[in-house]
Image (cartoon, rainbow, N blue to C red):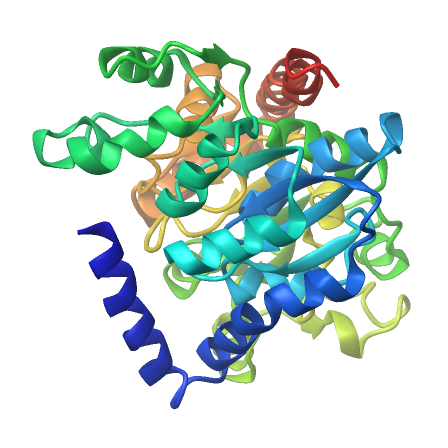
Length: 405
């Protein structure tokens, strides 16, 4: 049944590639993958294979790759992606020796791919369970590890109708999971090679903090003012927080929207009553008397959180909350919307007091009024957020030590 579904999916990809540039790039990339590997691989080297679906999983795997590269230069690294949003952004990443798409999970593709690269071990990040690749890896006796994985009772593996597909989990040599619930769920289906180590993403955000960029324009904009940073915001988020700052012009507001398109940027500007400037169009001098700074480019958000006293992470009123640890690592309280039940870090930040959930504008106003009147509360809640991230670090070292690296 799985292979039938894969071939139906393949037909869908071929058809969709006629109409979508993104799908077309992915389809071409998958077909070129074996050729890229043959062209770039060193036949005398031993390769460790890391597979990440997209950009988020790459960030979880990155600390492992970089520590492995640093401590074990005798190995080379193959990095594969499924999604164009991961591959196109990180295709020039210097931490891997070969980077390519992973060909679709047909039996023939899996055999050709593994026959070409012959990895000595493989790491699948978080949610990646490719049936044919994993079964062939097991047959070849290649150690395979699932890293930063997290399981929930509603997943297909734990349903009566998912038992056949669930056999794919028995192909892994070991699971390094994020929480105790995941370990217990795996134990119920007879999988006991499991260690609870947490999420390698916390190691990554601490690395990012250490390498944060100095941003003179942002420094000039904030310059002694209380500042609120809204990261990865969507229109429903902006409708909630912008009105409060229209009424409190003694605060500075930085908005880094998730979608940076001209229509969205103009929509944001139309809601702001004070002076607003766009990052790419302003100098350090020009931003000093502005109240709102709109970040209209990518790659700065993780450093920009450093300049805020309070942070907001978007997505909680729609697609699902974005990267909370990226903000919390700076020791600032983090506000977010209600669509966060599936995100362990959101629940844990709420529990420790470093994260604050809102269900609408009234909640946001209440929290910000309290922070406005009590700076000591901001500092106390921010410390809880920062301590939470520090306390969750260390998964990378635990994983590599456990696999003998």
